[in-house]
Length: 346
Image (cartoon, rainbow, N blue to C red; front, side):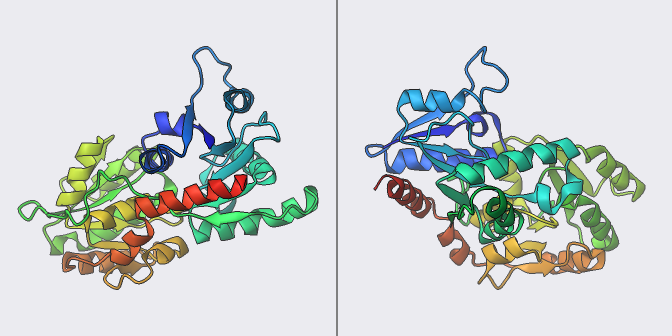
């Protein structure tokens, strides 16, 4: 079975979409080396800027792909009918939270996603929540404009990189801190987190580490300065994988106050390490964490609620994430993808 992938994220993205691409493809390589021939197609030197839209499909067909898998919400327009098509939809937040995206970016994301849904033989959603959002925002459009195409959606969770060792949590007791690693964008809700931390941080010695990058960083730094918290709220910009892993392992707790997510890779990474966590009570997190009793929940819009959750986190002990980690087991997920690919050729 010959499978071609759009490898832009695999090679050039260090965050969520890149991690998804690498854990999926590397897992398939490891488990099914003799059954699968995989081709990671990246933009050739000197290719036109639009090569991923017109050029990538032709390259996959010329190589002899049986299946093409678009790993991030889109498929090339020049894929022939003879090649089976799979696309992963990570989220449709540009539809549910349009104010978080530039207007023309939203239009492009919407167009590419709708086109991929029209042409894909199988659509993979990375959570039940994302599957429900796809149906909410696109079923009527496909019914109206595409001869009532029936969406074939499969929910397959994302496996987590084996670089994170299960239950490796060893908090730094001399200089304790909580951590949130995420892009500095409005959806991630750093503003409420910082304000919540400011209300209770005098009651405990823990600092707050914010690791990531994004266009709101300067605004966040100004807020921290205005609250006189420059010695309590610390920024780690562009931490390496090794630095981030160490920061997670030595933290006293993980805080995830996001307003909305399609999945939640940082949450699962923290669970793999075994870190206690306080997280937003949003549908996708409730789906993933279902059955884990020791997690602390809060309303991400309520600063007081976040403050109280931070106080609870100070006292939190080692949680049991077995149920969650079983769902994200790399071998199980590789098996599910292999079976899905095989079903297209049977």
